[in-house]
Image (cartoon, rainbow, N blue to C red; front, top):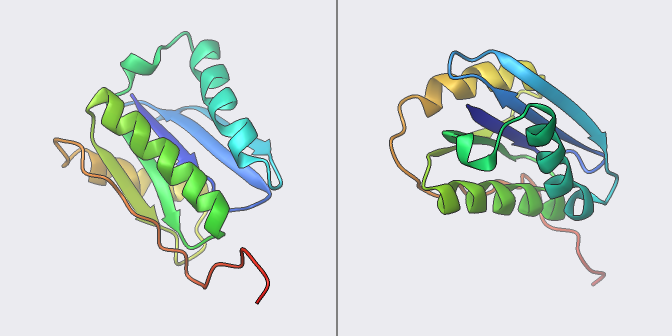
Length: 135
């Protein structure tokens, strides 16, 4: 089973559990405007609990690496990398340059993750300069 994490939108978090065949088992959109850090882990726990799965049941992690906001991407990618590293499972980062919907991105990612055998961290692609302080 794979987990999909998308925090590229600063207003929402998208999380999904996906079967090894690529079927979406659970897909959740969480309103989290500037609250990704407060809501991401809690909602990953809720999805796993609702599906009667454990974190250790995951065999891969898929995350959106950009473009997106500096802080929201950092939170999602750091969380995804940490889960994959801790469980020693592969991770795939996919860029959403075409502004595709999450289900299309999931299908593309499942094909990629099946070719990965081990953890190798993914890095963000912000798409614009960070806007974290005034000049």
